[in-house]
Image (cartoon, rainbow, N blue to C red; front, side):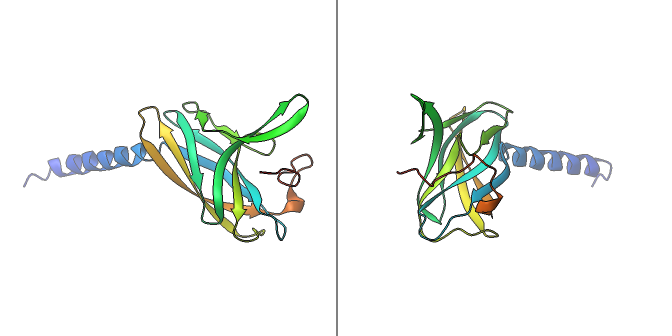
Amino acid sequence: MRVASSPLRLLSALALMWAAGAAHAQVTVGDPWVRATVAQQKATGMFAQVTSAQGGKLVAASSPVAAVVEIHEMAMENNVMKMRAVPGLELPAGKAVDLKPGGYHVMLMGLKQQVKEGEVVPVTLVVEGKDGKRESVEVKAPVRALAAQAAGHSHGGGHRH
């Protein structure tokens, strides 16, 4: 046994493990949150900043609290704000993409129960890389109170799906 090579081998092994871990950490999700609901409300939104180191596309989402989870956008059409599902959301390499009220967001529909402030909602985001490989990112999104929302960021009240 050559003692002199052991530290080098250990460092090499650690570098390989770090590189393998980094390959699986291409997508990061910052400041995720879900808007609280009132009793009988069947839909809400999840918001966050999503960054893909290599670039890719947010192609799907799911959550055990909702029957249907879709990627949505809100946009002005003929002076009317419209919300619709989109097949995916481009994630430019290294650039954070905002999922926010009034813009792109993850819509949770067919809620199985009321979502209350202080709870945490699990959401799985699926990102497809430029190479076609898909990565699932598990997000734990805290629920924020309705009253804590900024003016003009109302979501779900008048929208029908």
